[in-house]
Length: 166
Image 1 (cartoon, rainbow, N blue to C red):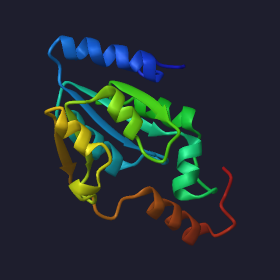
Image 2 (cartoon, rainbow, N blue to C red; image 1 turned 45 degrees about the horizontal axis):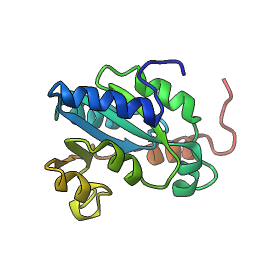
Image 3 (cartoon, one colour; image 1 turned 30 degrees about the vertical axis):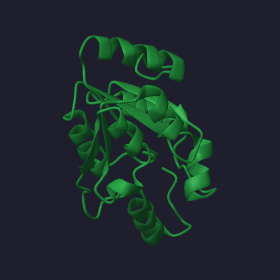
């Protein structure tokens, strides 16, 4: 992998355990992060402010297709991970193939689970597991009018099927 920040579950679990033993607060969030935009950056920065290390569970290409359809993702998982790993607010990135990150959250048991405020806490996957272990769930406000879907729709409206390839 291109970055020490991008790792498989086994290496990530080892790193998280070392950080926990050192008294560090582990924060976890997840998403597709297909076309990275200002809303994502603000969200990830706010997530990182909740603790000492931010772990991002990244939906794999297979997972994104299951959730969003066969036209997505726009950007392949390796490139999405590379872009995320380049952000200073992110400490680790790992992939998951399932539609949701419950198995990953259960393996890592972070201290803080972060999702957008567009999710009701009762609908946040892994919230029960994190809270049962003494952790907390934080819902970060969503930036209005900024989303990957909106960006794609804007491109299609502007260029239709004649999107310039420059």
